[in-house]
Length: 254
Figure 1: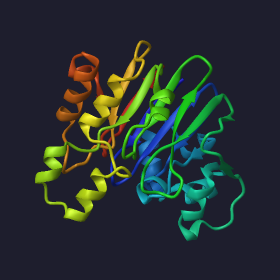
Figure 2: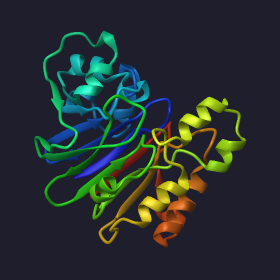
Figure 3: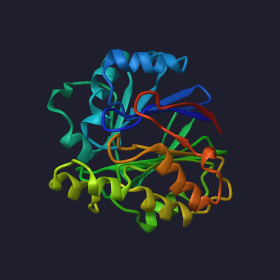
Figure 4: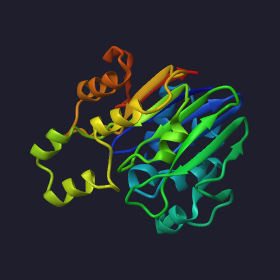
């Protein structure tokens, strides 16, 4: 199994996961042309994908989903709440699958375990991918850790973990007060220290890849995110990768 990010941040998100002959996109916040360009950097084309799993209906995660699915014949998987809140221009399409936020399902060679998270969306999920040998846990767009989230992410070989903002930078920054409250809320986004605290409580004995994701361009820096996570693991900050908005990150082999 291997995985790579096409980009991570408020201007678009997508993560591709591959196992055997199966390739699945987690979210697609990019338009057709940009999706193609970003996939090409990884040596892929959109018609080589099998499906898109959608975490929630915010535009930076869903904006390109339905057009890509219709154009390339991709199955789409999302919760009932996400479907109900999805853009109204989704149109009719085959291969639309409603999933339960607690029930695992398979797409080809990939086993996918969704789990619910607190975020300001209708029925948001995050996921753990597995090929039967290794597990990749993904957690972004979440306002706070829960015991269930910790249980889902413990023991993974790879983690993509939200480090949205540095709390001091957010407090001193130019965002309106209402937006700051939303970001800091129980249904907003994890800051660096909250992510580090979650990480410190996990079973990390098998962890081989750790990527900080969904960093705010204005309220965080890669160095701050790396430092917080490195402190939780007791490792060098350079060992931790960062998913950036412009380039995501390249293939990571499990």
